[in-house]
Amino acid sequence: MSRPRCNYTVAFCPKIKKFIPEGACASTGIVLIGAAEAEALRLKHIENLSQTAAAAKMKISQSSFQRVLQVAHKKISEALIEGKFITIAENKLPIAPRARRSRGKDKSPTRNFRKKN
Image (cartoon, rainbow, N blue to C red; front, side):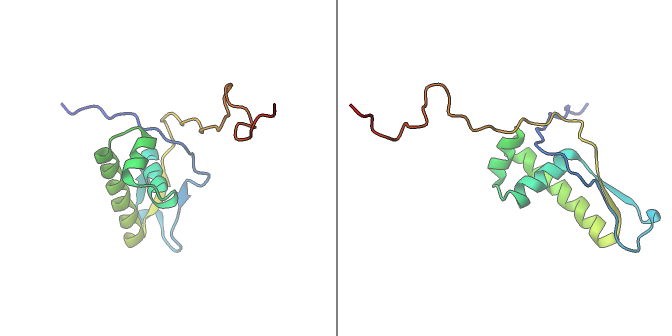
């Protein structure tokens, strides 16, 4: 019995979910990219994060991130070389909340200035 897959943290939902090569027909095939694979591609190639930093954002190990990225590269390569449709799967994973920058209660907006006596 195989080990259950862990939950990946995905921080985006793409607006466009299907890519169809010009002149291709459905009989060429469809490549399904999972939400975690799309997120791995985004973090590594769009955000230019290292594998370690990207893995930390997805809350998985670096080796798991590398496997997800490798599978995504293989699927994208197959679709481009063989002219297949690319479909990004619906995200069934929890979307991570965006990090907010807050000053906190103890930090005032003038913390770098001298206090006047």
